[in-house]
Length: 374
Ligand SMILES: [Zn+2]
Image (cartoon, rainbow, N blue to C red):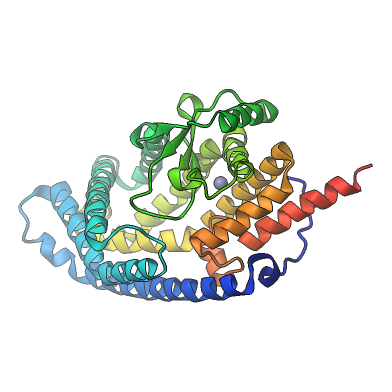
């Protein structure tokens, strides 16, 4: 991405249509209010649990690590219950605006699977940290952070094999993908389609895996005829751009960079409860980890936005088609009811992508540079 790239101002009412912008702002406001209230409820709950939780530990005969895992699961269960009303409100709102196809029951089932995975994850995390803390004492945070990066890398590598997909049955798009790979200087990256028609009408695509496991996945909503071939070509070039810029290994490196000081903060913060080797430290550890995650959210969102902007620029460079890029971003606004120009605080904390207005502006900036060239 050129460092001197200047993004022109975009009149969102003009580009996206006044009615759509008005509706998207209205829809977004509700989600932002529930998000803020959910954070308040979450931290209040974890605060109380950090104070009261250790008293449950005394009743347990499961040994320190077993008791710590029980306290971790109990904390997660309480958090889930506290967050449930906000999640239900969000589903109600999303259904009202046709942003989701799934009913409450289907959602509950999907959520049980997700919740089960979270339970397993928290147990593994506590097992690793408590075992290392009991063995090594206070320097557990160095090997601890390394183990988390290793686990994160393992899941990033196997993720492509965990989603069930079908091959992309569109020779023109297949051919376009091969052309973009050549132009971006990467080897063959399989492109497949994930059927999401039962759960959502929103459109999305993503790049997963690294090295031999790398893959591009398009949601079925992306190739069901609502988007033109030209628009899907932009999406393909963007996702291949994530791989040719090695964004997934880079994201893992960033994760390591954040994991190390985070683990150190956790070690220091839990000292007064006897350290992470003691079950009584676990409820406080949940509060500390939640606080670290919220504190790091703006930095993580910023890194993600830089990578997304880079992939957008690569897509413009390899498709040389700013018109379809602009059309794609406008259509995203329509299908996802996304506010093209969200409030600054929400953008800084939550947005993993540049705003749709910024993405349109980049397509215009690319076009302007082409015209300046002799
Ligand atoms: Zn992307």
